[in-house]
Image 1 (cartoon, rainbow, N blue to C red):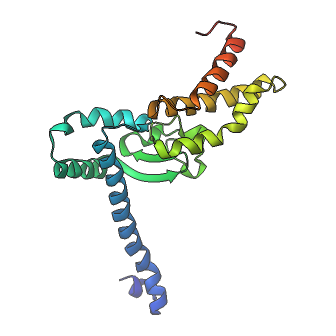
Image 2: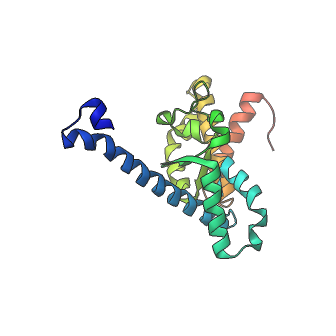
Image 3: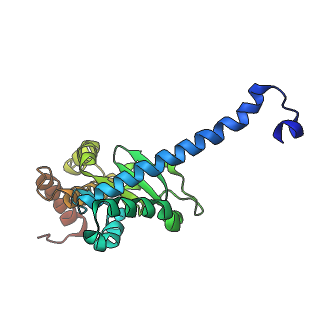
Length: 205
């Protein structure tokens, strides 16, 4: 039909239309497999080692999965992803699991449409679609080193420190949810408390 309407007799032109449709099917299948495996691992670990708004949502949904067999849990994860998760993006700072029903609430959204090419830690770590696991903690801690130094430096203007405080606080919250005993938390908590003490002129305990 395409060839007759648009007179694309050349096979190379014809395959230009068809090839992308094949790739899209493969991509959708791979996406479903990848997200299903991620969610299934979350269930198997009972949510331990994960953080983010998606983890809160998954914990609520998996309350009854303890009564399921391994196979039933795997099928539950697959069906959940198929019905609820529109897409996945993997970033060094965590996963973006774009939920169909709340896509307009994405922190990167403009006019209700997610702009995921604008993804960045300071946007994503506070987003409803964010899921972080233990492997992402070290990257996030490395990423905020310049912000940690900004909070420590008395010569940095307060307006810049506020931006640093925001991202450092987000990372600390995620790392604490994943590993409350992480060795970096004592130093970060002290910096956060000192900044809050000065910023709000209150004693932080």
